Length: 109
Image (spheres, rainbow, N blue to C red):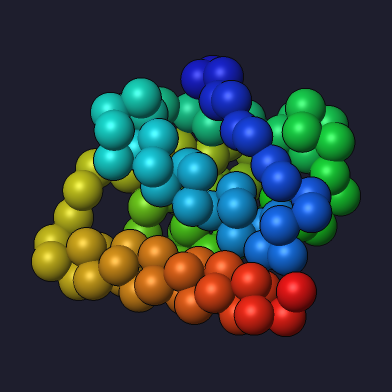
């Protein structure tokens, strides 16, 4: 299982699950996570970064919906091979969503 290092800002106004999504996307884009790498379980990552289990589960669901990871009951969560163009579009949409929420969070301060 691949160990991943995430740095979360609990005071940024950006939801923690979106910070997790964005950082895992960046790790994949930079090659620090490779297709086929197994990610920590939801419970392991939640304990490691000291957040609620449901927060990590929500982030993993978003990444799964975007086609970046695949979670198989009892087997683990794995980074997927880059797929067709629609995968790139989904990742861009998820990234845009993070940026919009970040901007809205900055406006709310």
